[in-house]
Image (cartoon, rainbow, N blue to C red; front, side, top):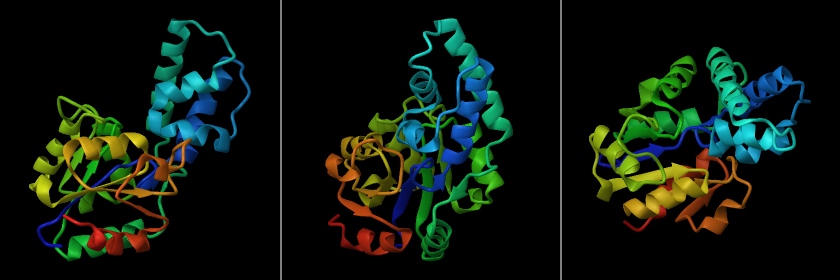
Length: 220
């Protein structure tokens, strides 16, 4: 484990951010007189980013491009001020991070959330201390699904791609890892509107207690 680099996606993989992202979406919907959207209907789209969430939530509203941009700005302002009201690490995630760190693994975050907001969220939840690198969509020249985002994150953490594993919850995470030639373990409890197994990850876990055995079983 000492020479291994574990790279985690953030939203839907390490942290259940749905409560605060849905709250931000409903905040901006109320601004234009639209009814709130329930969390379950919006949850599968969270992994696609704020703009896509807003597009889905306002699909029947016939808003102009300028109105969409205004809603996006309002969303980001509100979310930044309420980033960890209801967001929490998934069950077992912190224990897993502590065990991997104690065993000498390098840990990193590779997310399409912007780096500033990623660090704000991780700082607020007291998780930043586990990671040798936190790479958002604006940290490197490329972002997921480009393999350079993952490979660059591994480099920032001081690791090597040949001894790395990606852990994610979406089609984008799996595609990124495959393009980078890095094994990928998917979590089944994240944000996707398609069963995660359909994207053919190297393994799927239902709880963080299963992560260490899944890593041990990978053929690298």
